[in-house]
Image (tube, one colour):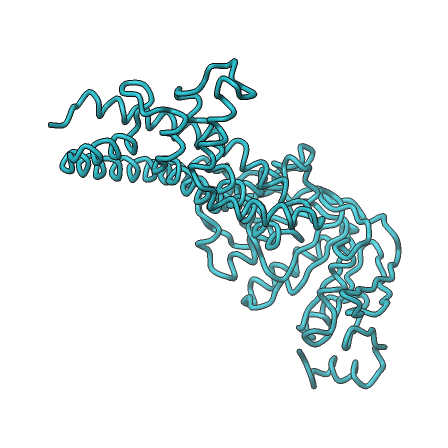
Length: 442
């Protein structure tokens, strides 16, 4: 016969111990994961090995450690916490902390690798960057937390050792199952096992529902006028080169940077166009100020940073108070007729490309670096983008545009930089004449 009161008490105690331990481990482990992900020194590689090894930390080892800590002769013996719920919470927190720490670390690492260039050229503060990283890594962090909770709620050894399995006080679902099994009450043990499984599934399902991104609160589009632009006032020319692992990817290349001009970078695939733009953006070691009314880099592969079209279009004004909202203007300009609540991941490739271009132009750059910004777009969209770039040039913005499109280069270029195998070649050379004649392309 199942004692309903005892079962309810065990469920409440289980929720209190495992739930509190999961919350505490999350509050400690997630920030630790984010912090460790930002470090590149070799010592953190060793720390990661240790944290990963602790994934399989035996519960009885944790139990012995906590028991010794809280026993009368232990360091925390005067607190008199042995055989209490508090001791069980401490034990379970220690047990699942490596799982949440390591899982969060991996999630933030993946986000950093994928979005590093975008973050480094955004001009956001460390706090703003961390919030964006948490939003992008939330799925991986959620799974780490769920795995931690699953281990906590299924744990037996440590909670028996430090909790004592006292009826009405420290008895949880797992220890109740062990007790009933030892007494030969297999029906009751089986019932409690099914109940524990349903309880665990319910909690995880609720957590999954809560962690889903809520885009219904996405900001509406505002600002029907383009943001105010200021003329470029930086160095009139720069010489950049790129070397990686001892190999010179891009030999010293001189680029003219004048206000109100468009410099087009031409070359076959692998010629060094992207490397040149990355160097100009400060991603290859040079110190370059990026962000609102500074340098803005638009990479070839578009990557959304937020949960909705509205958040994406309003990103600049949300990061910089002085930045004028212009989301409605760019939405109309580039035919982004989407609900602001829609996820950017549901857009087509062309829509995504125009969305990220709109987001970056919202920063009102004075130096604009674009890598294949019109590739794979229809003629109407290419014309709209080129018209907008011409408006930027008229306002004094300096634009450097990498493209494979020779006709576009001839339409827009004030000056050209032609690359071949990482080397700048003269416009009157045979290779350059062949490229401009459309006889070879990457």
